[in-house]
Length: 501
Image (cartoon, rainbow, N blue to C red; front, side):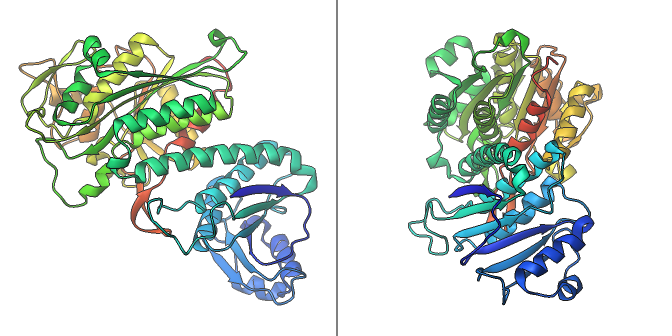
């Protein structure tokens, strides 16, 4: 699977030509398609208007040297990265057996606007590589797909734009690779991604990409007092993991660069513990480590792109099982911060391990920005569905920057309130705080719980991504991983521009 760029427009052989079309450039693009395909402009104009999501497929009768499939893919009024990414992805995904794919961007890319050109080329590359992703990694045979390594994607750009486009294509390859990493991890069954396996993946990525990885043993966790993580792990036969990753650019003074800290929930399978979940769709609870996967993959992307910043990522990982030794409702535990928690619901376990992760990050690294990601509550799904992740933050500036990054990346967030009144629901008579405050405002009370473990850090954001990590896909039956979160965080980190925040 390779991606090439070319300014040579002589296309020969069999394959698929994808022509993304914006309504604002419709006439010029349809004219070029007519000249290349041999189909009249009048006929194309009658059948295709360039609306978002619109597609027109045909086999040209007289295209010189080209005998494959043409797809006109509508983007809407203007050429924006997200509709372009999605249009290319859908077209590539629909025909996995086609080995040669061209994407014609010549009339779509702006002149003298390198930032927009970079965003569009990157999005097109992502669309190709994400469309080529297949969920059947554990199938013994996949006859509908071209042989591994056989598919070749070629982006057609104007010769004058090749230099900038190559840099953008590299960015797209890195982002697509990181998103595919998340998709592989989230789609994998829990017996293929134990906490130890997550640790091994993080360590291997650190060695190959250029960030350091520290893995705490159970003995070290007990000595440190990571009581939230250890409590959730009580019912498991598998040891927990506490993964600490640190990226620092080579040859640059770290003191002059912004320092961002990420914490991701790594529950590799969530039965609910003693507060057992119902069996309906329980198989999808293998995705409860998506926040941790996003943190690992964002570390990978930042290191591969050599972003000018310091990045620390922490992933507390365990499964949540209903063994005889498991945590009971009503138990009181001591967390790493020193605060005690009355456990009302053992299915509210993600916030217990995040509490340790956030407190550890603040105490040992104290970054300027702290962001956690977790598939934390069904309440976030009820509130926002699958259109946006729930964003909670104690900083207007940070919330605003993440919202902008969400729009630019196509991975939207929507800010919900952190009113002090929500804390009343998690007041405890016998401990410092309860881990569950009932169904009302469940996403907000979970966020208020986490806020108690950041030690008054002034710039913290919590992203509840429960509604975003799985979706129905045309490439597979059932719900599969989306890779949500990597683009959002990477665009946010790129937006810092290496400047202190």
